[in-house]
Every structure is written in C-alpha cells, then in structure tokens.
Image 1: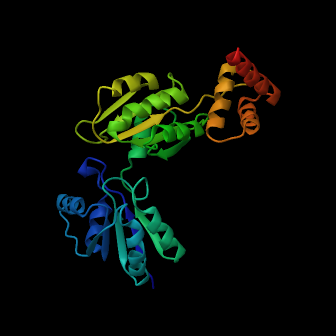
Image 2: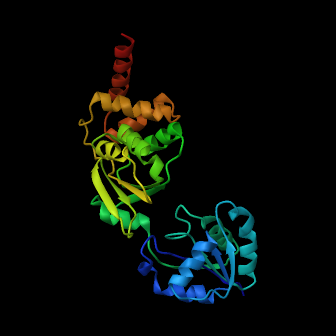
Image 3: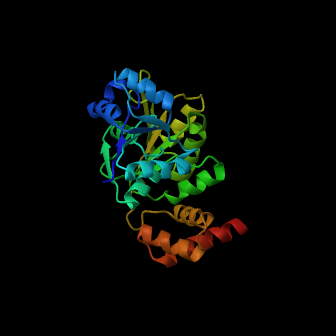
Amino acid sequence: MSGTLVLAGTPIGDIADAPPRLAAELAEADVVAAEDTRRLRRLAQALEVRVSGRVVSYFEGNEAARTPELVDALAGGARVLLVTDAGMPSVSDPGYRLVAAAVERGIRVTAVPGPSAVLTALALSGLPVDRFCFEGFPPRKAGERLARLREVAEERRTLVYFEAPHRLAATLAAMAEVFGAGRRAAVCRELTKTYEEVRRGALAELAAWAEEGVRGEITIVVEGAPDAAPGEVDAAELVRRVAAREEAGERRKDAIAAVAREAGLPKREVFDAVVAAKNSSAG
C-alpha cells in the first residue's frame, strides 16, 4: 500500500499561527521535505517537537531531481510531509511538481491547512473578495512585466500578487500605467509580524510611496477592472486597449473584435476609433 503526501501550511510570521496538527505531523512523518532545512529545525524547536523522520531539502534548485526520490518513498508506504518557508506549499513555492507526480501514481495527497499570505492580504485589503485571481510574482524584466499586466488589464476580479521589496516601486508604477493611475490597491507588508503594515490607496499614490524604499515580505492586492456599460468607454480608451493587445501579440483584427466584445460595442465603432487615432498621429 502506498503512503501519503501531506502538504502543511507554516506560519507566515507569527509562530502562534501554526496549525495544531503541524506539530503532530512533524513528529510522525517518515520523511520531511523542507524548502530550508535550517528554518525547519527552528520551527520544530519553536513548536517543541522532535522531528524523528528523515529530513531532506526540497527547493526550486533541486525540485526536479528530488521529486522521483520522494515519489518512490511514497510508493513504498512512507508518510512524506512537505513544508515551505512560509504559507502553503505549491502557492508560489515548491510543491506543485511533487503533487502532480504523486497524483499521477495514484498516491493519496492531503493537507494541513494553515496561514496564507494570499487570503490574509485579500481579507485586509478592503477590496472586493467575492471573486479574485492569484497572479504570483510579476516577471522581473520591465518589458515582460508590462506584457503580463496587459494580459489582465480588463480582468474584473480582484488581483493578488507577490513581489520582492526592491522591485515594488517599479511594479506599482507599471500597474498604474497599465491599469490606470486611479485604480485602487493595497500593499500588505510583513503580515502577522511585528511591523505589519497595510497601505491602501490609488496605484499612482502607492507607487510614489514605494519610491522611498520598502522592506519585508510583500503582497499586492489590486482592484479589478470596472464594469463598463455600452457607450461608456471613450475612444482613447478603446485605442489603448487595442494597442495593449497588439503589443501582447494579437492581430489587430482579433484585438479589435475582443475589445468590442468587452465594451459591448459594434466592431466597426472600435475600428473607426483606431483608424482615427492613427490618422491623427500621422497628421
């Protein structure tokens, strides 16, 4: 009989947030796969639990090579516990590859629910939470970042991102450019830690604030695009949307059709706006 893969959430800041089952799983697992074995040992010490199973590292650099080894252990009946540095495994952290491999082999996968920076930031943001999507880390390169943001410029759901502190100002500025300077957002910093801070405001305001330098773990929550009734989108906005789609690789014909569909307008009206803008810039 095969074993069980257990994905365990770990505190994103305050150690008191550790789920009670985490200590039991750490004590009983045959194998503990940790993103950082040193942090794992500090966590076990804080929880006053002795890890009796074999401890192995499982991080981005060795994830592909170590996954078959862990799957073999699971197939042999082992209980394998997967933990990352903070939050739930697989959410912008190692884990997906192992889960997929275990599922393919018919191995049971379960979880110890725990803290999540995504849900915590979303709840604290003050923005709509009925529908949202998680976008992970934006690309590091400016051009790629702009292209990725343009892909979701018309997304109606609330958007959640992770970002490194030294790239925060550039990312917020790019968001203000693509989503609009007045789009509401919240920057959640050091969640559940001593210096927790939630800064809310328009993207342009947040970008200016971040220029001064921000430290800590960062989660960004951005308001979704507003619903636009037919006729409410001006010509300049239609042209901007078409241009954004073209820059992302769409043919102009397809971009015009997509923008017309989103705005609830005839394709001819969007086409005319694009042609008028082109003639205006040529003149």
